[in-house]
Length: 461
Ligand code: NAD
Image (tube, rainbow, N blue to C red):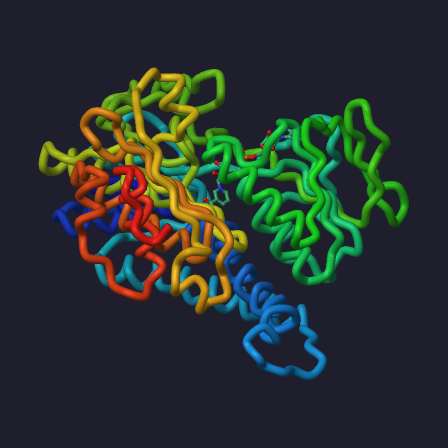
């Protein structure tokens, strides 16, 4: 039997970051991962490969359509999908090997195989060779999530697939149907559309991107339509299957859609099977998640859980923050995650980014607020970039002026949101943002102007 202070099950952004932080804090740490590459869904088959393909496809689209606006002439522009995919793989490979290097540097012991709770304080790892047993005072579960399935949609691992397959399709589909207009559908739908697919989204709700600011999501939808994407809203998919070389997608009350490939992107589900939860008396909730308290403790003593397997937005950075807070609590007694300030980004063009409450949220909660907004078309840098779509919206408390939420649709929104998150973490008012000197000419001036607008005095509008 081997012994560690902490055993982490899962080496995704929740688990591997927790393992590194725990090692920094002086614990003897082991991490169990069944995939050959470390980094979890995010690094292997999620955030990172999708961003690599988004970048490649955006450059291709820019070369075809945008460069001429800058007076740049190109010859015929084409792409090599195999090389594009190979570059994506290299990006993933470098980063996953980087995690292995970080484990070595911090002295985290890696166990290759499937980790299962045998009893409180004991984990069994099954992989190649004999099962190994590890004893640990603390066990952190960070097993992540997998793509949700939809009854009637016959996934075939090829033509009808989830994001995992859609990150590696060997050819550009002529016609692609995306089921679900959430972050995954929109990002991968954008990739394949830029590469030439005719993409149709079928979305159950009457809007895209549920949870994001409604008005900005609507503005984004119109921009995406201009890019050639088609949206069928208020349409529930009931089945999808192969019919020879075609796929057929059935929607309630509509004609079936015929296409070459289908991407199912209707959310993700926590992974808890085979974890041995029953052996330590942990009962998942109705949504299959592991219940935890604010210290990330499960009902079993010494067993903790973070990330996609517990309640909350399924985001890599949230999982990492939770992993850090969890082990800091174990070692120092302190550590927390501010759930009010977790940014979310959708990496389309333009990007959508948000932190804090939405207008819809605040209205429902009866919290009085003022909204300030500023369009990128009035921002000098956005003009110079030729990226003037979208705007910044700041929501501040009507009485205290404290910033409650910031929503951005526009160029580099994903980077701009960091200022808003930092401001909110420090309890800033919109006046604090408005009185902070922002460099000129930058996109960030739009954030300042939105803050000024919340105070009723925008300068450049
Ligand atoms: P999602 O929950 O964001 O969106 C799924 C969409 O599918 C919803 O709009 C839903 O109404 C729709 N839907 C469900 N059933 C349907 C049906 N039968 N017919 C038609 N539409 C249907 O899920 P996702 O996009 O798959 O993402 C999964 C998770 O991963 C989310 O938590 C997301 O935040 C996260 N994620 C985040 C990013 C990012 O931050 N950039 C990127 C990828 C994934």
